[in-house]
Image 1 (cartoon, helix red, strand yellow):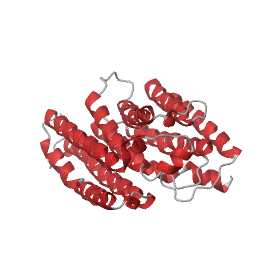
Image 2 (tube, rainbow, N blue to C red; image 1 turned 120 degrees about the vertical axis):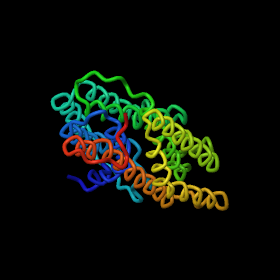
Image 3 (cartoon, rainbow, N blue to C red; image 1 turned 180 degrees about the vertical axis):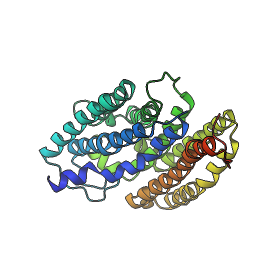
Image 4 (tube, one colour; image 1 turned 90 degrees about the vertical axis):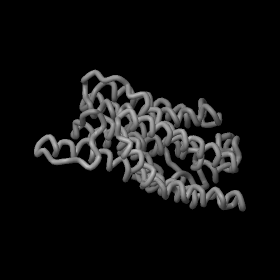
Length: 304
């Protein structure tokens, strides 16, 4: 396989989308762990890399992109590999999981292609492009993983958690565009970050972070688990501190809005939310299972 094909699939970039997957598992009333693992493989080893590769095939970036400072130029092989990965992802979803998960995956793939495809190119439009990412990388992926975990049993759509998942994606997404304004304009793409300006991007992201935090407070209050909300505030404190530090630097000098700082922001946010949602999975499912089997106590009781 061509070196550029492997690079442009950007398997490592799937790491930054892991929090939504973990959040969905943490909120599922019950978890089929085999199905959860299959959902992980389909999303993180097939769907996300194929989406990255197709986007790179269409964009042919020469400047830094998400998680990749020096992208190579794509070959036709990359396109065919992404098609095979997409077909495999949908097929495995139908065969190994359930129709609802498969439909979510299919719509995600179609939205991703419409986002990048030159004759549609939703990413050209700042609001539509943002909403595509907001909805599909957030709520749709959350529900896909959620429905994979709970199986074929009819469950109401968890509206508030889906909303929170989209807010967390939406808050971070414009910050990944903040250093690409010139390259995007050269390609005919007007991003939301460009429309808002560098300072406006920070204000917009801060607003979504705040709304996400308020929404989490409401969620945990409904579950009578406010201790988990306070844990969230503690674990995500480094995110707030780095965000404020970076924002002040950009306010002083626009050149601080660069690839390195954007990557660090993404990394800090991802690591902190992974820690938090992993803790929720432990308290909501693993520790609860142990309690059910052995009668042990839980520091943070599971959601009601």
